[in-house]
Every structure is written in structure tokens, then in C-alpha cells.
Length: 177
Image (tube, rainbow, N blue to C red):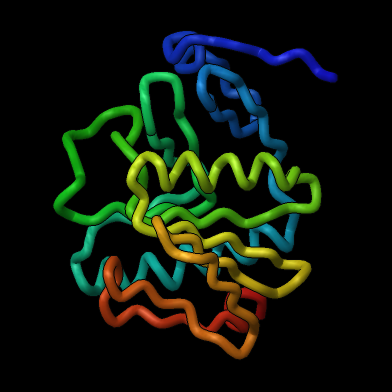
């Protein structure tokens, strides 16, 4: 077993830019290697679809995997795509405070199922309204919402979140096209 690297938020903020993405989850440092092509393609499609919709409707901000969220004093994570409602945006800071209203995680072949599950739980416990987990190999998206069963969507289904993004619709097949 690889020993855990524990650090404070101050130590985390002082990490040098090494080309890797880092997250701090309950004080533990996680290093994420650069994404592969399939992952990046899905991420770009999600950012484009969500970003265009959010901007056209003045709903808030969409983030990429570089946008960090401080979920609690010891947890700073960066979903592959995030959405924050306009009314929750705060003064400029190094990180968004609290969970994104919508977090999108795109599962890579190197992602461990336990780590994906942990991130979903972190987002939902911190107040996210929904977490969309994209599985490129299976061509499916699993929608997690607080207190509701997981909804698995395939290529013939449509992603929507009327409570967060009224009117937004994206064919699941388009995420993988």
C-alpha cells in the first residue's frame, strides 16, 4: 500500500506547478495524471454544451478541471466540469467556496471505483445539486442527486437538470460523438 501524503491547505496551495492536477481530500493529497484523448474529448463537449447554455442564459459560471472548489477546510477538489449558479458566485478567490451546483466527473481507465465513489459523496455532502459521472467506455452517464436513486443514461437518453439548468438538454450520444 502506498503511504498517504497528508498536508494542510497552505501546503497544498504552495505546491509547484508540475503539469499534474492535484486535489486535497480530507487532508490527503491526490495526484491525477494528465487526461487521455477520449477523456478530454468528452470534457470539451460537456464544457462547450454547458458553457454555451449557461452563458446564453446568464445562469452563472462553468469551470474546467482547473477550477478548484474548497468543500471544507481540508478538501479542495476540481471536477472535470463544474457549474456554479450566478447567485452563489463570490468575490474572486483562489478557489470556489463550497460544492459546485453541478459536478461532472469523467471516468478514465486509471480511475479507481472507490475514488470515484468518494468524490461523488464529497460533492453531495458539500451541497452539490447533482453529479454526472461519465463513463466513456460504456457510453453512459450516471446521474447522482441527493436522496434519490442513481439514474443511468445511455446513448438514447437525454441529460437534463431542470432544477439547476432549466431548459438545458444534451443527448447522451453527443457526449461521446
